[in-house]
Image 1 (tube, helix red, strand yellow):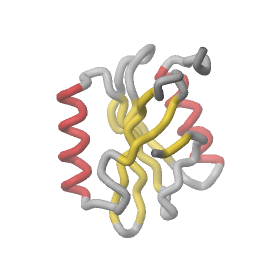
Image 2 (cartoon, helix red, strand yellow):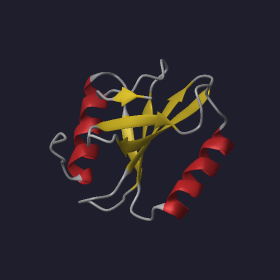
Image 3 (cartoon, one colour):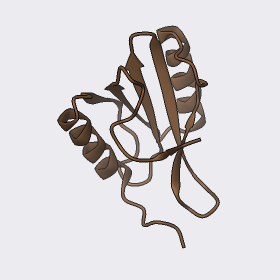
Image 4 (cartoon, one colour):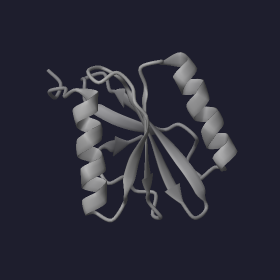
Length: 111
């Protein structure tokens, strides 16, 4: 059995609060489905942005994938990636954090 799932809206609120406490302010760019929407996180730094896409591993554990690759990308590339993901999943949340070190303010395995 995997870890318990919490509603997307609650997870987003908690992640933003945690980011603010840790000095990595965050904001919701796009609201998705409050109950079951997926989450895409943009980490903003000096060299560009990294987008993390949420997914579930085979055992149900939450994990993150660097959707835009390992290296930071431009604002235009970030926007293009977000638009593509929204076309695929209209319930998607988009949240961004100022994270100069490109480390999200929440726990989670990044693959």
